[in-house]
Length: 165
Image (tube, rainbow, N blue to C red; front, side, top):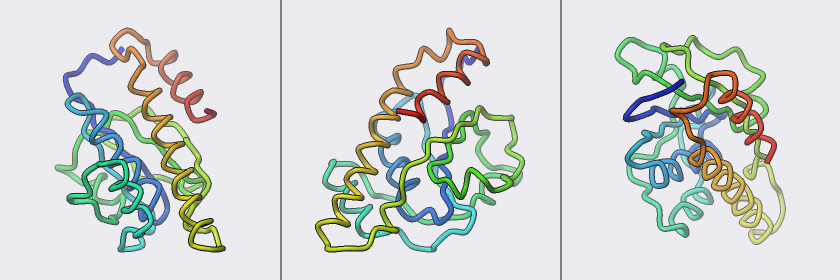
């Protein structure tokens, strides 16, 4: 069972420019004060997609300190001890992840890449809005879990089920 005052959550994606960034912003707001949200990528793009920023701002969430960064920042001495690590893209889920200190619970919450959508600005905006809504729903479901009363097996099962919603 987990029984902590504050949990560290890391959202992973390859580029850390859209989905994982949006998830970080959502969790920062919805999970406060019990969760600290982070995001990172295996091959960070080095920039946050303006369409992701637009979705975050449209939801009245803070964009402060959001940046594209490497997952290496979270596997070095002095990095936050992680309790949960969620991959939000299929590529990151297939990669060999670094060793995460503390052996966090992990789950794959794959979301189609809105940055890969080609089309009109309206079609691209719809793709980002859909990805944002999916992440928002999954994070809301996660935050409803009674973490302190679930054993590790039951919690892992619930995390995996959320990724299917």
